Image (cartoon, rainbow, N blue to C red; front, side, top):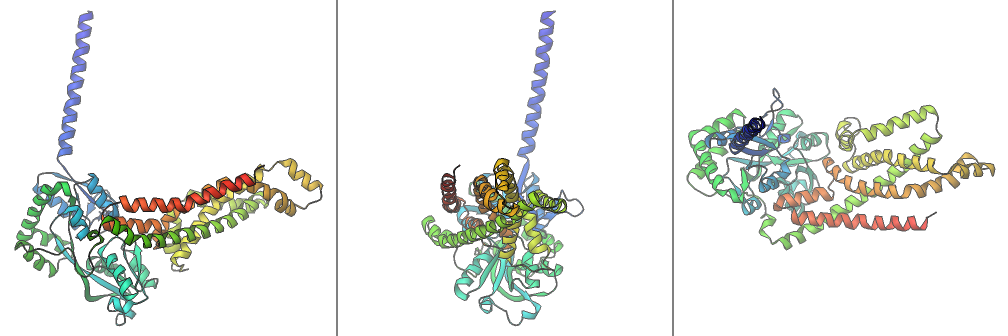
Length: 501
């Protein structure tokens, strides 16, 4: 009987193991059959966007190109959602095999990655308000004017050169919607972006016109890691066939982006003629050594650091003033006032600061048109005031009751008790958490880049995107943040020692 039970147990274990191995083999086969491609649906149509009828699916011409490639290599397309500015790094680390999301062909990408042949030619075009159409025809006409674009793009590089040559003021955005909405309401004077993006927004917004002259010519490509050059070559053959048999043309016509530029591009590619990575602006910084590149970007990073520290200091001053007022009101105010202030604190702590920044800058733009720096300052100050108020309220309540009673026995009014006894003692309790909050605010200031404030993290992100690596930019950014935060921490420790009980 014991032998029978042992045999049955071994048989069961063997069957379970076999089932597990079959499942593992099946999963591995499925994984091997996936064609992982990266894109950013926030960029929207016609590149990649969530299908309005099925939000869990994506549509766009890059989606159809990815499906075409997967079909030709007998694999199943699997979409990987990656933020646009991180696609290059994600491809390098192997999160996906190819990036397809309106990705531009640049010398930097050709030097560090394995881009496909171009599959679409676009033009960099200026968009201006209808009233300025005759006045602002070229970048030279926009001297001293604010011109918006997407960060880390060819258009941004063009504007940096125009800043040096014509005095244009580049304004960087994280999406291609708000440049045009800000143009219409007058926050900026022009937008420089791909004609595909400009024409799409022209169908959604009224009040601006696209200038017919091209500032530069560029191309969309797929990007693969340099180690995947064999797959890149296979994809190039698929794209050439799709150019020859009209498959690409039918895809682009479906998305209303086919034009006369594409047949000329395809003719050159099918005739094996080389296509320049980009025309219309100076060479990419990748032509320089890493040391030269770092020295070239360092002044921009230092200027961005100055914006970060000034913004953080002013926002912290606002947060302290408001925080003290809120804490005092919650300790000494009427029941109605305490309820109102408590509601404010819970609202600001219970909603994301990014949402609050969007509401202040974009949400109320029709009523109050705040400048970007002003909205960033107000947003950070109002948000951190809620946290500061809790620190001060706790510190006020931590003051020993005996000291307060002694002050009252001496005949001091409640106002003088607060200003001469309770407040100074509470400050000692609050100093350490105040310092922590300021360091946190210094880092949270990176969020204001969504409002076009050009602070340190945003400049670092553009630096990394342009050279195709985070090593040097990330190291410089970390060093600058430490240089700003460490002296503050040292000062706080000295104050704590000086005010020690």
